[in-house]
Length: 306
Ligand code: PSU
Ligand code: MN
Image (cartoon, rainbow, N blue to C red; front, side, top):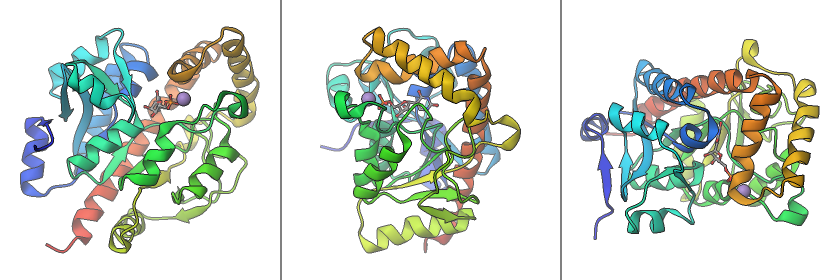
């Protein structure tokens, strides 16, 4: 049985030509940003990929079908939908088998991208090891996915709401290269510098593409995490955010919020506590990542012998 993927006309055309494609996730649309900024951002991210010479493929499950590339109408419907499921590796098959609708996280988007032969994926920030994980065991399935699925994920580092040193340790244990772009420090989503050294540094899309291809040549499973610092004029310094993150975390603990609800809850609370500054920064960094991902996707196509 072949894998049931539904391609948008734009993505189908790019595949037929062997043109560069960039996968995009949909949880950031349904659970990461409020309407209407989510729809506006999703469209601008797609346009940024196109302006960079690649084709955007936003991924989601609609009525049981795994879509790779959404039509403008489907994107709009998803951005306005309520109670959409948040799909990670564990949930994807159940949602499809039961005709459900759901947004894909980094993990589920990587699975779909790989099935569709897409090498590069742009997002905001990956999930990771949550603070207090020694008690909650809350470690995002995104980390396991990076260990096993060969897709290069461009993010602005890991979200500052996470335990970043532990997140780096888990990635290292699982053989995932964490590559900061043009920068020695690990970027922390809303801030350019997490106060930690990045394990690896590369300075050009061509080098990142070559490293992606070399992993394939070596037969190594898993992808790469490309940590692209937020543009300077959009960043919120880590010191400004630290006390607000502590507050949001403490409130979530008291309210008994656990599991998949944690990340969306913290993002929404930080939006309130910063009067929208985290959202403005989030939009800027996603656009920045989409532009870099398009360049990497083009390099991979250029470097691959015909
Ligand atoms: N990046 C954002 N906002 C988000 C996410 C990423 O800017 O909402 C989503 C991604 O889909 C990521 C998920 O995979 O949060 C992680 O969720 P969890 O910690 O439950 O694994
Ligand atoms: Mn989690």
